[in-house]
Length: 446
Image (tube, rainbow, N blue to C red; front, side, top):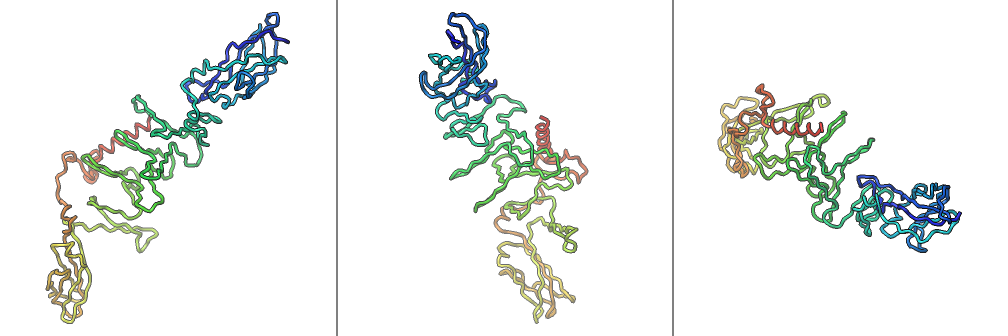
């Protein structure tokens, strides 16, 4: 059958195939319509075979795609078909260069001239996207900006050589506002990450994540559903030869400056802080009580042994020992070389061992880091104890104030209200803890 004429009524094509990044999904096919008549001009009603080819030139040129559709329905001379419905059109066909459509009906020669493919309809919806060299690229369902080789496991890859690879803002204010929302929705037993940040520069600090908040800089929350161990914030350092800090807290202003604050309640065992290793404190340690806790020497498998700290109001050091008197019933006790540099206001105790020693006395007080005992029997064993008050530079600058008025903000509140049979509302930190719990509960409900 010879056709007297065929012309393109509409060729709607999406030049940029990034349907996943716009509000309306852009079709991945070309809607082609045309009109076929007999040589006499009469309209036809039939089914024809048509061959569609996309070239890179108006004449000759290279073929980028071709498809044969064996049963295109023509009604009253009008045909309509979707290019790419049987043989998909690869994204690589449209890289920003001009493309031409060739049409062939049955055994007739390909019609001339070829039609240049332009963007209309949905293509205009995607008009904010432009392809310019390596600026924007799509490969195998992945979107790349600034690179032609998107990362293997990424749907969106942005690469930039300037300050920011991405910039996101939102002016909507509510408790549900998220400028960026990242959520893992899969399942399994692996340790998935909703957000992963990596920054390892050759010189200087690298921050895997840097956050600035109006009240909370970083909020780590876990809502446990099982019996495993859970952590709201996990900090770890592995490697290197310098000082490593799993968690480093600094506060430079405010009425109450607390680098790290921990609270625990409601459990069978509650620790506001638990340290596996040595603990160093360069300032003053304040506490409600203190003890050592070890495996019980007589039953280490089943018991613990506790002893309370020895306290004093005046930064006291205690030294003691046993010594044997010489043939004259006296002896000189040698103290550490730093003793007098560290201590002042000495106190003494002597106890005879094995027999009474009513005449024991300190014959010479501490001088040159030693003191002398006399008045005992030759060969007598004596237990001695000496105490001193610290007077080193730190102690003199940070002398403990034994009795202190509470600040106005803390008056009427207690460090341990439960020991006075008072409710938790009387706790000094009650308001701060209440606000934090309310914030976390609100976030959980949302």
